[in-house]
Length: 257
Image (cartoon, one colour):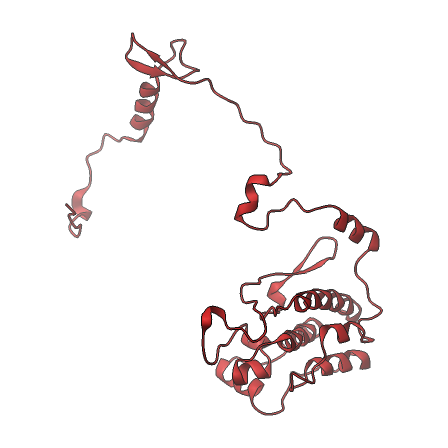
């Protein structure tokens, strides 16, 4: 992917990551598969299934807990299970390197060997040689082994690699902010969800009981075209075959009383 496009996508991702961190959460699984690209070029971060607050452990788990995808895991995560906001920045660097080169940041098919390379020693993902000086410096800030020295999302937004990039049209952004989304965010939102698709439902009159035939008649069949019971029988007859059942496959059946 051209570096000019990568710069724009990187800034959009940083805005999303900064927003997540601002509210006290860590995504824990930043990777290309969790980044959605809309038709208008807008970037959205998806899959918050592993998100957590820094320092907290899901479900009260104790000890080392690996979260995320190995190719994007940070050294502190591999070494001790610690996953704070800096881990998302490391993963972002892996995403940017992959967008630029078209290859994963780490070239290793053995997961155990990969985790050793990430968590032990000073090795960092390879930075594409064709990348500009600004891009190389940007990735260098992402790939700092010490999480306390790694740049934050807010700091990287002011880096020369991204500070002059803007993929969003201000007019469309303002329109989106002023127009509430009708898309449901959870199952409880569906009752009030206004669908953009108009559907028409034809109401049938209630059934009527016929003393003459001793059966219930549907609203459409009350004029004498047939009863509900007759219609049901006709549907059942369509499913019935005149062939004898094949019991040859019933030898291993278990009788339940």
